[in-house]
Length: 522
Image 1: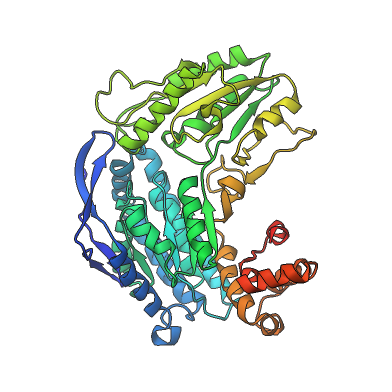
Image 2: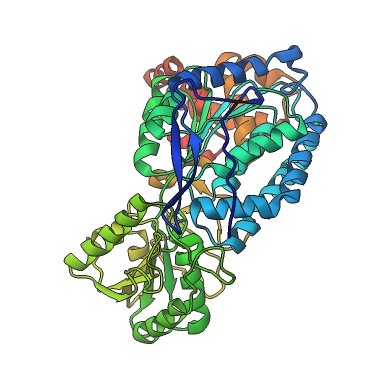
């Protein structure tokens, strides 16, 4: 299919702007390995211009343009964006597919969710009029990864705009096309200049200057653990809040009394959806030893029925991984597993009918030990590793045997396990479309995404930093927010004088979120 990729510039202050150094990055179609266009590459010079634009947008017209405008005003823009996305759904989906290799059907569904997300937060923006009167004065700096390029960006952008923030979006350099088209939509609907700025570029040239910029007040990041650690380190230097959605290595446990065919179907879905590139993928299969052989036979049968093809072909369910670098990384994981003694039960090679593109057959690896790299590290590709268990306690120990936290799956075929140790959970159910978004902790990440409260509480944190007493007595502050602060006060009150001084001197009281466990950790 011939898809024309528009050649865009950076989106700053409501208009296209060429990068100061005029640098660009080639776009490679992962299904053909051909260069199809390029994107602008922002550097620190462009970051300075974008941050200044966002800062100017906050007080413009005394905030009446956006930050102190009514939620109904902001909702009008969000609904207009949703309508434009719906109108151009097919075009956006095709651009997403040619950019990152996602099957076209999946990309269409993602675009429907993008429009639905803007609609959802338009409704919430109107509801905020009765709850929040103060302007929210903090731009967000947002990085994104390449598996849901536009949808995951919107999970962060839409709630930020709904509550009156301004934002800078930095997409992955591996999949930026639809995010740049979002800029075109924003211009078409007349979004005020500077409210949303979009900078494409490399992490070290664009992302790093944004993460460390003193005038960026909050960072929301989705990506690798290594980059997340660097961002958190940069943010800590000036004590700014961060939300991190990082990697995962979630298990799926299959007991001996399940429907084997249904369990095999959902196991394949959990690991190989989105070309296996999803942080909540259930990429560790833990199956009861009594049914392991029969179950794996059925699973292999399911996997071999998955259509691997150009993602534009009808019925495609597994396209290429996003880039040559990721493709080589996955092959190295498989090679290392073999060298460590594991068995490649199925897949692990290029499909014979596809001579070009970053394609890989869905891979199932058995005879795995818990010390192997393939068990302990995220692959971010269509690779499933397998271990067996004999008791429920052993199953749970294996599930929790990971440096990552794990993802809960909907219990369609998994029973309750009334034993200890419990799952060490970090995410809410993610099998169901449009489910509540992930709340991450530990290695998998920090904070929530797609929550208005996460953004709104950032304003509350700012208020707590400077005027906690006046803030708690303000009759305009919502009651639930006051209750949150009271919980924080209780946690703060039990600290030693030395501990209180450390928190006060570092401004850490302003970083406490609304979660009780976060209060405890602080």
